[in-house]
Image (cartoon, rainbow, N blue to C red):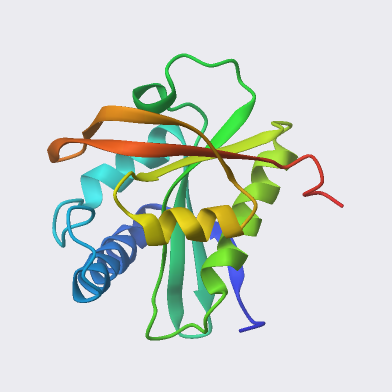
Length: 174
C-alpha cells in the first residue's frame, strides 16, 4: 500500500478514529486477545482530549482512514515524571480488512520519525503484560523491555499491568 498519506487528525476525523478503534477491538477479541480493548470503551471525548494534549495521527488511503495512533509527549501514569526525552505511542491500530500485513510497522516508523523530528531521542510505549504476541511484535520492531507498570489506570476501565518498552530513534531521520 504505497499510497498511504499521514496527517494529524482534527475534529472531523473523530468518528472515523472511534470506528477504527472499535473494529480493532473486535478483531482482537476474535483472535482470542481478551482483557485489552473492548468495543465502545473509548469515544469521541477520549480522542478529543488526546488531541488537546498530544497528537492523534491518521494513515489514509484513497478510500479513507486505514490506520491511526496517539502520540503523547508525557505519560506519567505509566512512566512517572520524566525529562522531555521521549514521545509515547499509544493505540497503534490499522483496518486489517483494508491494509496488507506490515502496515502497522509502517505507521510505527512514521511515529518514530515524528518523535525524532521533535528532537526527542526515544520512543516509548507500553503493552498489556499478558499479551505476549504484542510484546513480540514490538521486540521485533527494535524495542526493548525496560520495565513493568503494575496497576496503570485505564480510561473507562480497571487498572492493568503493562510491559514498558522503548527504542532509540536517533537514526530515524536518516
